[in-house]
Image (cartoon, chains in turn brown, red):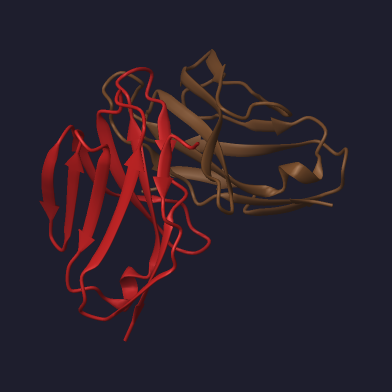
Length: 114
Length: 111
């Protein structure tokens, strides 16, 4: 049971570099989302998608891009990394956005920006 | 002010004790309530999922929702050292599946 798979698990970047965090799910879930988790802040929504070809912004979208070309994959792109983006990033998926089912999470990508 | 408030802890209890966790919230539109458990360096894992007010029990875990007071609780009976983790509350309205999380409470169960 793969569930939600995130790669890489760890990454160190220099300020100004770009990179893509990968997320894949094998549950045929329509709804996928990206969160960042910072101490004392809990999980904050970055971007989400209710299906292939449809994405929208969450609470903290600045500095991040997403696309959803397939049901399975939902990559998160950092355009020009900044130290403020040092965080743990979680991808999550749910059956869809309408049946109010809870989300299932990957194990995260720990990102450090120097 | 955050929409969902949760005491960060740490909450330290001896093995076998009851762990009591809670969250308060301000948005009366929240209808679905969840508790997640997160071990160190892992993703959140769904523990309990409830709709509207009332109680739900699953093994050693009991979730309570009091919508009139905007207050939810999670109780863990007969706590074990393996229950040591951070517990996150989460809640959702019924539109577009957007979730709002609490900051998490760290629980330490000592043998």
